[in-house]
Image (tube, rainbow, N blue to C red):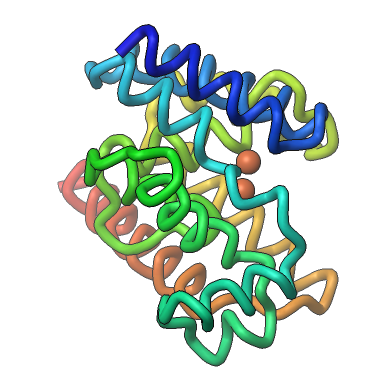
Length: 199
Ligand SMILES: [Fe+2]
Ligand SMILES: [Fe+2]
């Protein structure tokens, strides 16, 4: 898989802007660190991080058109607020143009913008790595989230989702229903866990 990763890097470097490519590299290194911590195959985590924003070389309008042309189903909410769509279309591109067949990698790419209920380990690793990677500097809770990610991945996932939702609500932006559904799922799971710990 090592040579696959080198090839993948070269191709992505030629397609993405330099800042997007740097972000992708940084996410892939962070995915590897989290995979070490939580016992997930390192190379699969590295590939997921590298490829996750492969559709970001297109603007949102183009991605909607590509999805329609390729009969990739899009919800009404995704059509109205297509910023999340580069994840779904990215998974399609990863399979068709980057020849990645691993279902866990494709799943992680497909849900990296919204999350989803019952995420598997690589889904969580990528979602969290995308937020905490070293090049990020805007969010005020980054230091805390970076620490938490290596202590309790589920709690980091929950806190990052919560922060993202709060931020979108404050801005008056549309919240994708899948983001809301994922957050409700993890909020319930967290409450149940706390109740068990209390009893
Ligand atoms: Fe993304
Ligand atoms: Fe990203």
